[in-house]
Length: 341
Image (cartoon, rainbow, N blue to C red; front, side, top):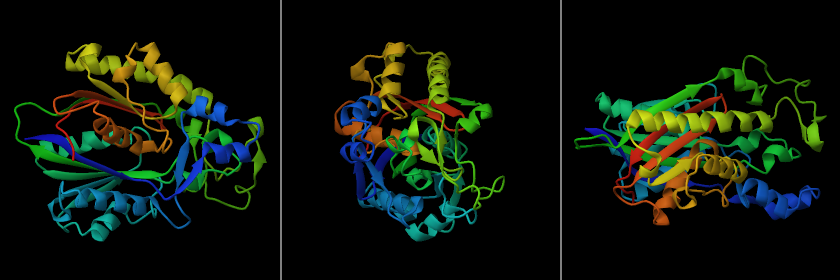
């Protein structure tokens, strides 16, 4: 038995912030400049009191409604989030109960960002290969907007909130549908994409909430998300090509044998730089973020859903997935596509 992706659904919050809206708030940035740099026109933002678990719940309900599976068929829940409801209990446990998934199912959270979907597939594949589970509900959900200062355009133009539900199930087949995997970690880059306070290392306080006017007129406090864009870019242009090459070597295939490349949808400038540097044809490179922004761990499943709808992949296609970002953390894998509803 081998794990395969058999369904994907996603959910975006109702409220949107468009590039036009942002250009009014930041008149020094034109619509054209934001669009050219980010490739993002709309960002969906969670409402006050709307948590990542709420978005994941709706995405999972959509998946159940699609007929791909039912709640009582799930025997393991994996939730990737960096914006959990609580420090404890585990948010995946709360979603198991809320979704009506049997109490005999396993459930866990794992705290990863933009590499999270690839890592989640690795966990799901391992659970199924070791016969610990047969039907895994992989949820990715983030509300980064709650960490972002409204006057920090360096991150506000990029990130949007979302959740995706991916059903990974055991299939009777001679060869794997998912894998091999390549992973990487470099914790020295942790300070370059971070919310400094809020955990036990540095609790929030009156002092940490003091706002400061930082580089290029952006405003934030230590309680807000900070991203060193230049350092993130340098990390990405080194780690991603190395990961792609390592995966090709491990799998014994060549670049031109891959039918579609789906990278973490960070921003258009970065994606185009990577595509051109690796000489990937545009027709084999998926970009699906204009309508929702950088949704962290949900960007890849959202892009996969759009790729199938656009006819860019069909059963039998070979797809390479590459996630990279906060941590630093990165991962890449191959997926033999069998199709989703």
